[in-house]
Length: 430
Image (cartoon, rainbow, N blue to C red; front, side, top):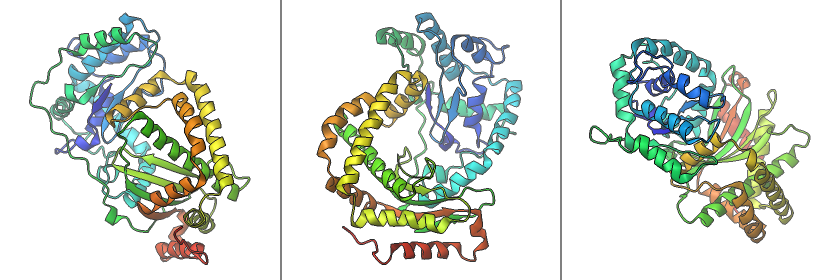
């Protein structure tokens, strides 16, 4: 069950962190039908479900609740749907349940503080103004003191029919599932005018500086070169969406192969390229090098030489052919692994795809299309793709290393390293 309403909706005084607190309370609060029963949901639902590391998540835009059933019996599915309906409408937020979960949420956020701070600083540099930058989703300052009335008011504002989505994935009869959902949720009507969602902030591309750095004492050691642009439209035919996804995968494979050849013998994941079509309105293409010690300069120089080489000479036919073969092999493995995919993960992926108005394309479908389409995509096409992508966004270089704290002007040192890596060949256009 997906609720469209996360940290972005905490706009009123005293609401910071309360969407996360509500997520926790779903598994502790009594309900209208069982006002004296703490932990009502797990007591009734866990006997029907498989163990899972987590049953709820909250992000800047949504809260998800997910369970994996032990059986596909209609009675069991109906029980879980009944519990979801009570989650959506009937929580009482009894004061002792609320007090029990306040400390848990605060403790959970404290444990994530360093990682959240590192990520927030990175996003502030590469995507200023985006939701993750503009919204302090990990801010739980109001959790210890928020009244039950304030928590209930936010719950009532967000947990509404127009904000909810139910997704069921598995070996079930669709007609039976639809009837069960209609039985439990069909009569649910909003009791007031529809809530107006907070506008989603967008990246302010004019605020992206060419260079940034982080020198946190306990921070990571990584060099990053990123290009940021508006998210590409995912609308269109299924074939067009499949081709766009395959092109991204092919380019990632080709660049990762090149980065790996430049540093033979390094462990997997030390260097790489990643593409993220964010739900926040921006597309991010990132090359990274997780260097050791204080070797940030050669790490950054290697990434810069890679992007320069792709912008001047481009991909060779040989490395493009290798990338195509590798991608086919990757997709063949993914297709073989489909039977082992967890349905609860597929349900989450499907809910995100539906919310983003795009297709969820199975590995087997990607493989079928790849065998037909990839042979037609030659190196010149890949070079044109790279040129369009890299010039269509804003480029940003970032270094994160505690050693930068020893420098008088880390940003200047980073720019100097980039200039040295760009010469004498430079980054001339193709």
